[in-house]
Length: 462
Image 1 (cartoon, helix red, strand yellow):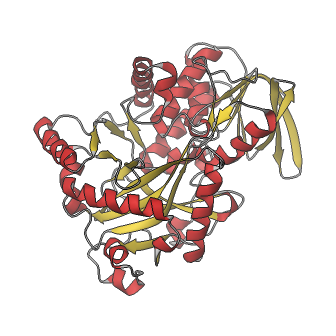
Image 2 (cartoon, rainbow, N blue to C red; image 1 turned 180 degrees about the vertical axis):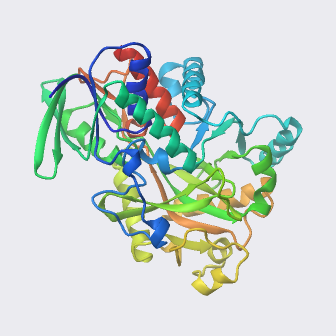
């Protein structure tokens, strides 16, 4: 098969690359390769079974058209200050202009026009004052909340639009290898079971998301694609009652706090806050189960969950941050017998594990049905655990009750943003004809920034 452009991965970065090419009137032929299924065929059986059945050959929550976006909480961060380091590549003003334009596309396809986290100036000032007292930074960021169920409808409309405009989408095909001729990429080789095929293209766009970060790292090493070890985030998903989070939920919707707690002073931050949300599980390759959070537009729980992530950077002599985080996750999975592990914050401070019967007696009941009570500190690295504990105690000054004894900590929450691919402002790598986008490239974090990077890529290809 021959195409002008082949896109590996149907997540937001890949989708918006094709979408922007069409919007700009390009007549170039486009193929999108996705090892998962179209959005209308993505189904997580956990909604019926109440437990993860470890779907094969991939997790339907993380894989398929729109990637993890279709089953995430669907929050679009509307500020260049949130979503990774892409603004340092193209400039802050350019990044904000791209975000504003990309947001208009989401609105065209049915996103809710209401924006969370704007206004309430005096109340924001009071929250910021408490954050400063706690040694934390509060980042203002307007949020457009799609909602997990609404996001699926929106991305279905985008899928239909691409199909109507002759974008060829190959579902169920996995990219095995890049086709190289010296320092030029000529396309990709694919496999689906016993079937194989090649797609030759003038431009190859790799946009495989966090799930594809490890795969892309191996390609970089194999083909001499210039890159450097980036950051990997290791943390927990914190869950507490809505009453505790009421003020920040109402005023900010998502309270983005950043700190550098003593004694190690690693960067620790909150991420992906879900008012009235549900803790969820995602499965990566090699049966790695990680925790995440969802927030629906209509369906609400009694709890709010938010990620607390500790950033790690490795360079010399160790430079495999993704592998390091995976080992932490594997050890935690082992303690949970393949399930997500949860522990009460008070039990961590008391140096004891949490028992299932104690959860049943608590004010905070887990929203993840098949979670296993245990001891996350037996698997979490000391440095990360101390950073997380000290950050939660500091956040308690901003949100009184956040560090209560009954607050739940789920583990492992891992974000594979590592392996930053070196590119110029035109999104070219050192390999001619090859471009790397989105979270797997190490430049973005989250739906909006990945989508915006895809928009810029689409313009460059036109």
